[in-house]
Length: 551
Image 1 (spheres, one colour):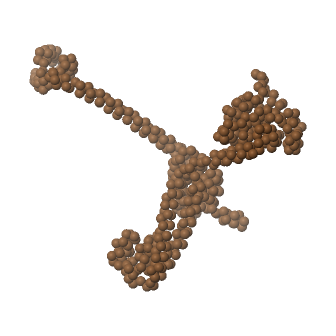
Image 2 (cartoon, one colour; image 1 turned 60 degrees about the vertical axis):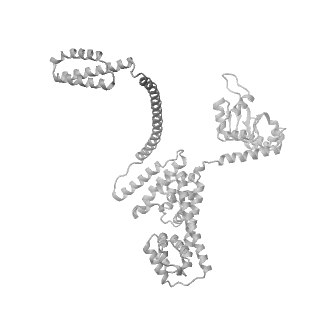
Image 3 (cartoon, one colour; image 1 turned 180 degrees about the vertical axis):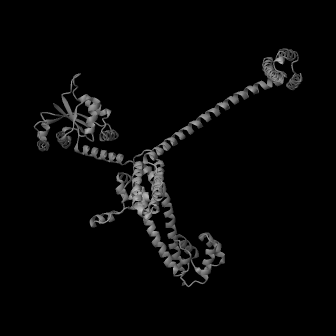
């Protein structure tokens, strides 16, 4: 059977024909040794066709398709043009050797060309790659290297592309910086306390908060300048007027030493730096919360922003965390204790970073390990949903949190929790109903808008018609005869129906025989005396109705 080789280079597709090579009896080692010699290899393998890429963008698209195992239209037309066509109803007497088995299977499914990818074909294609520039005379070594370098850079850039809103690297950097800031702010606050305590030692016992202490150190500067006029400003800073008065009284009887103006300025500047760091720490925490809600909403709603970010940073990425088993996630962060226990054959740790979760603290001492195991299981589910789901929603995280709350109640009170299957079904239903409700609301708003538009157009049309009719009626002083007759007939029918009903209820069958005469009389009277105005007609009708009731 004839063997053809498909080679995908950075400059285009190449099709090679392998002459006189029988796979049977040929060992891979023999082919590997013959590939290095161009004279021997050039006699066995020869170029049949070459299709260069039209541009760098085309080369990138073809490379992406090949890496995904897809045959493009250009590759299909190239193969159909250059490979021999088999007779109808018969199998092809050749096979196509390819590097990627996925591409070979796709080619055979679509075109019916038999493909193979084994070590023998791989070694032959390695020789083609090694001597490719020798097969094409017009192709230079420098041109091929430039094409390979450019395609490699563009392909790498395309693979590195990601969703900007789901970058877990930013979360990793933010949580590292948050931990560093916490340590630095604590050490700097202690330095401010120690430095300013030489001047005003009583302030340490009055104010315990580091941020407030730095704020007061910047405001007070010199304790001898404090007076009762500064109490409102101190109360605004501290939030308590009694504390502000206590600070003023302590400043009057302070045992601290006096500092020079230069020293006080330095203390004030350092206190300002500590305040700026504390404010930046708050802003960074808000940024971390927003990023965690974008990247891992389910994990955030289950275990919190800080603990979730620590888990992601320790695992390396959200995808690495999703690949971890629940037992691995449970002791993530306690690797030293785990290996020490394995080495000394002691008790292994029950929890790692998830110990900082509020659920572990709320559990009793004997149930902390069980709670850590259950929480790690739910965290593993939440991280996998966040990593692999396309829609960003926190419904599953909220349901998983409810499950953990129910498990806590089960451990404390013995209340049986719901099954995981029922909870997941409820989460899926709520998510589907949420999307359907949004669609229904949109449809309702569209329908109501359309109806309101139709009503407006009808009202405008009726208003225009009325405006056209009114001036004619005013000018003539009389209505059109056709319309007046229709109105009179309708009113007569209504009066007749009312009379019939009243007579039937009041007098019974005896008076039913007299009603036709009354109808005739009322018709004759109404035909003879036409009302000149609307008010006169109404008065006459009222009189007729009263007379009929009296009869």
